[in-house]
Image (tube, rainbow, N blue to C red; front, side):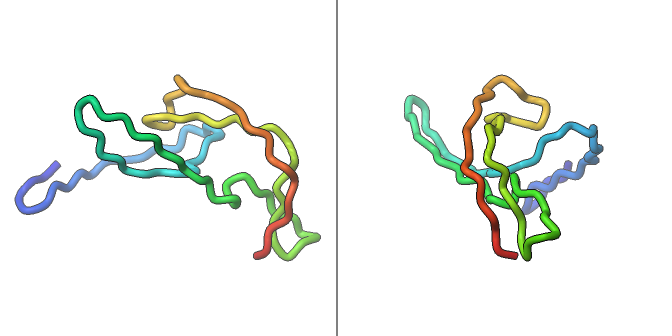
Length: 90
């Protein structure tokens, strides 16, 4: 970590093979005693599969598990949502 005019952090990332991906990220400032409601919308391509029969991708109609986490290893808040099937343009 270095300081000066700007804080810079350098670190290594190693893939663990965990079937997770980042679907949304936002920075929120909350003051002491303040509560803020935050809504993140996942990019549809996060759950889409490539379909060679289509010019784009396909989102399977099914239940998806979603984790609200501080990092990829955090599984303290897990819920699920059902998505309707859809096709995507390239």
